[in-house]
Length: 212
Image (cartoon, rainbow, N blue to C red):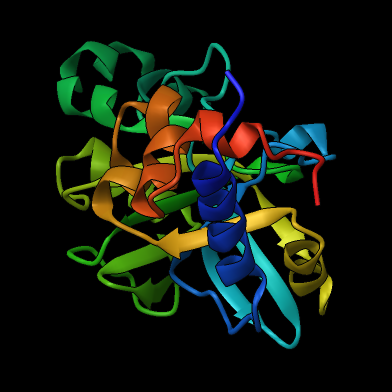
């Protein structure tokens, strides 16, 4: 069905709002536009952990890591012995995600701010923190970890000015983060959920891909 003039205007207006002067986006979500040329980020939703004149760093929150479950990862990293795997029912709630193409062999835990390790935990925004040490995995395994957490393998990184340029080139939209987008277990629908926060229907936006 051909989109109406009002539909086209709404999609273009939303895109124009995101393409206006870009401020630092720490603590916000990036949403890949349908015309995203980099296949690694197609339909991706990214939580921005750091953004400054020195560049940007974020964690993809809607791409599950294939065939990797959190309890098995704890065993592989020797955080727990294999025999304790069955004793960690709560650990099954921690999603293991493909956080991005940089340092894919390293784990980064996004979590609520009810857990903090001095000199290791980075507070980001709105009660969200980032920790990249084994200590948080040990805490989760022992039942002393944060209320909500996701483990990302790797991260997304941008050189100085690169993210701003990609946004200006219609590569990304952005919206305010919330707990469901970051920690929600329904990763398959986070992309549509993020677009709805901007009042955008995916079908309407897709119809504009490739059009000025």
